[in-house]
Amino acid sequence: MSGIITPMSSQPKVLITQDEIKKAVARLAAEIRRDYQGKEPLLIGILKGSFVFMADLVRELELPVEVDFVKLSSYGAGTETSGKIKMVQCLETRIKGRDILVVEDIVDTGLTVSFLLNYLKRKKPASLKLCALTDKPSRHKVPISIDYLGCTVPNKFIVGYGIDWNEKFRHLRDICCID
Picture 1: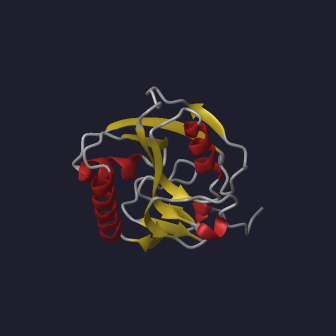
Picture 2 (picture 1 turned 45 degrees about the vertical axis):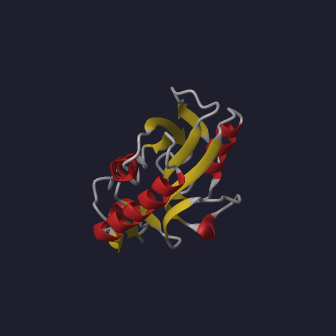
Picture 3 (picture 1 turned 120 degrees about the vertical axis):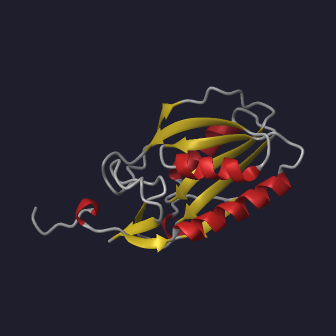
């Protein structure tokens, strides 16, 4: 096994700086604020990765919002999705008739967010939109429409700003890649 590089043995390299992240969050908040004026949307964060992004976004929105979280899993300890999505923590909030904004840290294959969006559609929300901080379009396995996108990232394994590898690197202020 020696000679095999794992994310744990690589040093993270800055891909998106904290200043660039801050500008992206402000831009996304302005777009969302414009579209949800006069409404009180329910923001649904996908745990654990989205919690940092969602906290910053909520503070920037300057709108009355309600928040809830769902925890989905498809990765385990590896760097590749298993493709099998399971709901680890369900929502506590009523969805029917509500304006729903799903908040995601990264759209990679799209399988996880597609699973959640299909689940939420069955609950009959008034509207359903997706906000993602980052997107890896080259990895999509299913078509995904992102209504509010922070930035597109290359096909590299990213960490930081809440995004982890095996529960490590969430604390980084920048979004970094690990080769």
